[in-house]
Image (cartoon, rainbow, N blue to C red; front, side, top):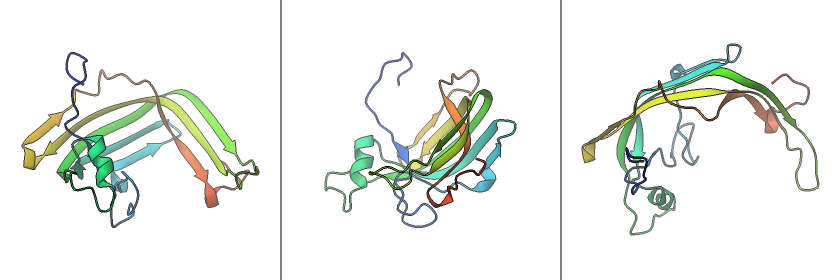
Length: 168
């Protein structure tokens, strides 16, 4: 978004692509985040994630990111370039606590096994991105006074980790 609120053409799209090794191998737009960069206290309804110079890619546009997911990518696809991001994301301020359980068996599904305890709250984020090969650097405004429309933290269980009657 431009400073005047209008939208211009997309020129950067930061995401990890589809990792080929490690815990996130084969998962679309998913990256392994070191545990020491995350703090969670569900009792206090707070969480934070801090990443510094986290390696990612710049695919330039969403369309180009999707096309690069095709193996092999189409000939007119622009290869992504190395980038790094730094961010501080914080969740706090309880708006509501919500418990969800769904273990219904239907003709179409076999036990939609899902349960969770969630805290609806607010979130703020500050972030920056650097693309060395393009001599590009972006830094967001400060987290305060950013505005949060919806945020949620919590604990869930699903699939083989779901057992009816357990605490979330």
